[in-house]
Image 1: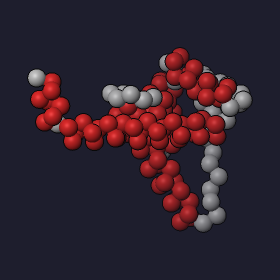
Image 2 (image 1 turned 30 degrees about the vertical axis):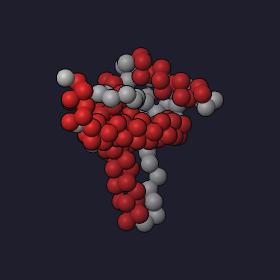
Image 3 (image 1 turned 90 degrees about the horizontal axis):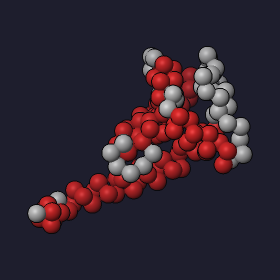
Image 4 (image 1 turned 120 degrees about the horizontal axis):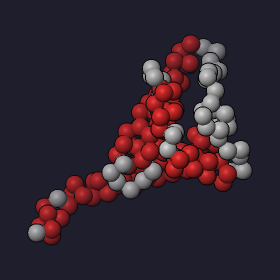
Length: 135
């Protein structure tokens, strides 16, 4: 029975396997880069400032690019909840990049998970950086 299913859906299984490998590879590279760039008090600060670019079109383009990257990571994290990968960690990194109302509340709710805090601080320790301070 399973062998019939596998032979009938071989293309779909191959496609899903390739997506899984690509998403896992991208997040293995992107997540540490984002975590390393954040300051250790990032999650306890009330305000987050971003330096605007000198020209408005460039600033708008960079904000759009940042939000698109966040949406990609958010989608990849959701998919990785069902396939091998770092789903919750990827979702949090995607949320950090996206601009939307109530973002801070959602981040803080997710960051109450000690496993997520440990994963973020493990990346920081591995790169000889101060650990995050959580509320």
